[in-house]
Amino acid sequence: MASKSKRARSATKRNLSKTLLYWASAVFLIKLAIIFRIEGVNSGSGNQVYFIDGAWLGADGENYLKGYFGLVRDGFFSGEEILYKWPAGYPLLIYFLSFLGESWVLTTLSIVQSAVFSYAAYFLANELLKTRLKNFAFLTLMIVICNPTLSLSSIVIGYESLVASGLLISLGLFTHSLSTSNNGKDTQYLIISSLILGYISMLQPRYLATGLLVPIIWFIYKKRDLLSAGITVLSLILMLCFQQL
Image (cartoon, rainbow, N blue to C red; front, side, top):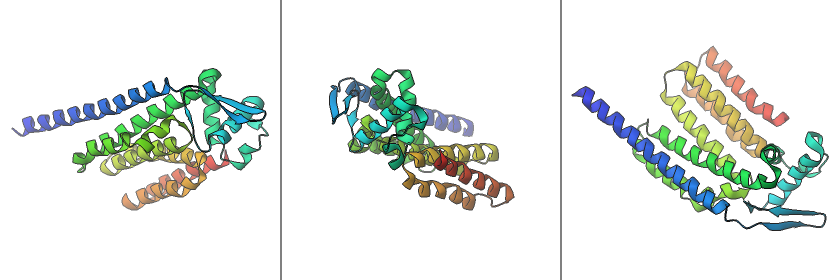
């Protein structure tokens, strides 16, 4: 009887996980339909006029595009002034995505940001299924993916969606880390989380303080031995390295 009950709970959890995935995928497909219906417009002034297609121009979108075109024109050692005044993480992302095709780079950007956001929301909700908060997993997913401001920011030229996605994934990894007894996996998740938070701080340095708290909280919660201290220091160093790029 106990075995049957355990199998039933396992089957229920798998079904809930599939439901979460279906909803996250459905929202992503809706965004794809929106992306391919966005009409291209010219933006900018003077000698810097940009054709925006497949994405909406955010409040700081023009500055990111200036940085991107500076990278396209001069490479990594571009002298574009905006790259020294603004964090270069987001223009660099657009630059790398342009390798898939410069003509549709902004459409690619919207698709990538939307895919990452849907996965991040699903990942966090799926991790909640494995905890005592499993009854809130579906509600959490719906609040995240159905929030117009948060969800539609993935179609905007701006770092906000990627920051939100990174924080969701890091929170999911942290949740998993706290519930696992496998020290090897535990360390792996912390390192991955540190890399994500490090990249987020590269997009917007103000999030560095938030990122640095995660390894410290992990160290306090976990067994505070020499190995844990070493892993915590390594995680902090990884995040700080992104500030040097």
